[in-house]
Image 1 (tube, rainbow, N blue to C red):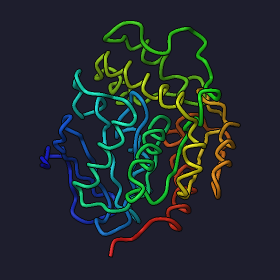
Image 2: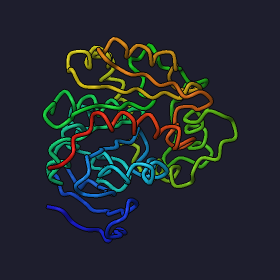
Image 3: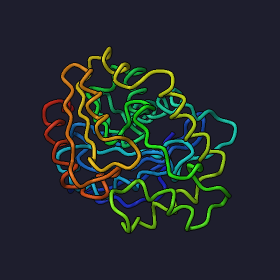
Image 4: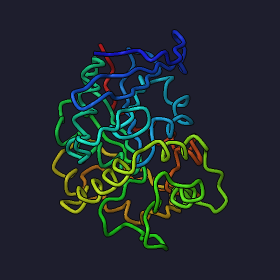
Length: 285
């Protein structure tokens, strides 16, 4: 079942955006779509404590040539936040797959930012028929690439968190001190429950503990693009080259950008992605 939530939709045009809700067994999933419906599908998956809105600056650069689909993973954004459902990566991934099925998408290039890239890899493992190629944006390949925070706490120590706690937590997502974090992204952290915040963080760690991403990807045979802000303060940027263990993988380092190049410099981030999808996206007949 698809329920419209009255989101904006401009008929035609590269920047048309439609917002809706998909009712899944585990809870409602918020979906945004833009671009021509007969264009190659591009699924964008956000990172931890974020939402579809983290992709907002990138969308106008992509919808001219793609059907751009964004989802709020369960527990995030405008999707449901049930306390009695699993937030493990192998359970988040099939929800994204079901969302594409409901939208009538048979093939998609899947793009994930940070832990969203982990979900993208799991989706490719589970649904190789659906995922034609993968692009990972500042997704750490394994836990040995993680840069430990200066303080012992990895997130807010009280709930709901204070503005200062959220800013401190989010500060390492950008390359330079004093970067003005978009207020709507701070709101996304505040709108999570403490359970979904902590559980989704642990889920990513657990998945990477089981097996590093390059090892998972090497056996899938999917085209792979890795984009990495060279000044990432959460994952060692040199670890991007670990993905070269995947046959044919292409790695793009972006100097001067940090963990969130999609927000810091959308055009520079979009350029290698568009070149990649021009080769690997499948057009709808």
